[in-house]
Amino acid sequence: MSHRPIILGIVGDSAAGKTTLTRGIAQILGEDNVTVICTDDYHRYDRKQRAEIGISALHPDCNYLDIIQQHLSLLRSGQPILKPIYNHSTGAFDPPEYIKPNKFVIVEGLLGYSTRGMRDTYDVKVFLAPPEALRSTWKIKRDTRKRGYTEEQVIEQLRKRESDSEAFIRPQRQWADAVVTFYPSNGGTEYDDLLLNVRLVLRPTIPHPDFTKILDSNGNHQGSAVRLELDRDMGKPVDVLEVDGHATDEQVRQIERVLCSEVPHLGQFCSLEGNQDIGKVVGTTGETLQSYPLAITQLLITYHMLKAANVAAAMAIQV
Ligand SMILES: Nc1ncnc2c1ncn2[C@@H]1O[C@H](COP(=O)(O)OP(=O)(O)O)[C@@H](O)[C@H]1O
Ligand SMILES: O=C(COP(=O)(O)O)[C@H](O)[C@H](O)COP(=O)(O)O
Image (cartoon, rainbow, N blue to C red; front, side, top):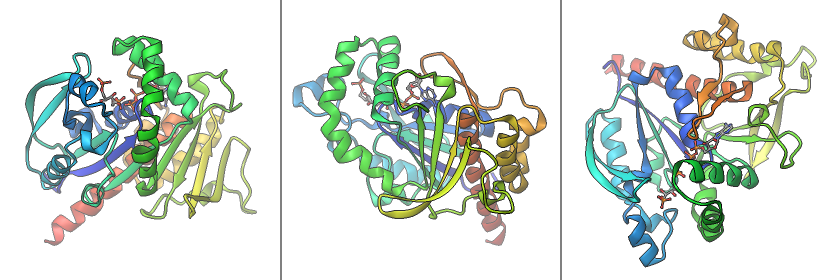
């Protein structure tokens, strides 16, 4: 290996879209180059024990955060780990698995940014923050179709976990280099998953692509479906790029050009080079999702992974 593994964190609440986004990015980086770790595997208690104790999986005390941190450090230095496995179908633990890191490691889960040690291990940190109404819809759909729960059980679980979501999950937003929010354009309950807009909050904690290139010479937007603004997030200044579900091919190509001018590898996954599968991913409920907002989100995060790999390779040559 020419450099140490590059580590991406994808953190967010249950059914925020972590696994779906992870799949899309792994497709672009090449499945064989990517090791995916889900931190649900580090739950301290199985489902029965959690019910007896009265603790939710979202609580830090319900997870071996110290072992996650230890394993992340090992993976970052290219070493293997013996990872526990939490089985969402049975609610119990399967035998552990031996995992060697590939060039890229994606670590997705609920509490990945809870400690300083964990946060320091990632090269790129993403937080997923869909509006709560959309997350509930996604969670009901997935957990009734794939995890054997009834709709009433999922709604009750969401209600019971709300205080832990507020206390432990949502505050982690502050540590992310990019906060990703897919949202319905009319803000209402009637929406099409394939026409969701995306709001990308870009913190100056890592150097983002120069999106000002998509503005015309007067600094104006080329249309209303793609917007670049300065804003504040949790009190701190940020750039915000929004891409609507109905953005045009040409608007999307402009963004792709910005990304590909610095990272040509991305070209083959863009509509620029005629790729028809841009932004296509199979969601965890088995449905095929495809949209420009999804594509731009995946490309932006992959851009950061490849840039981090270039930096790590340059450092490896120096030593
Ligand atoms: N970007 C997206 N666009 C449309 N639907 C999505 C998107 N991300 C997730 N979903 C839906 O939400 C469900 C839950 O997503 P998932 O990736 O399993 O969440 P998590 O891994 O965070 O628990 C998926 O089954 C899918 O139906
Ligand atoms: O919230 C999640 C995390 O998964 P995800 O982020 O993929 O939703 C699960 O509910 C817990 O792991 C508990 O498992 P269970 O529901 O089996 O008790």
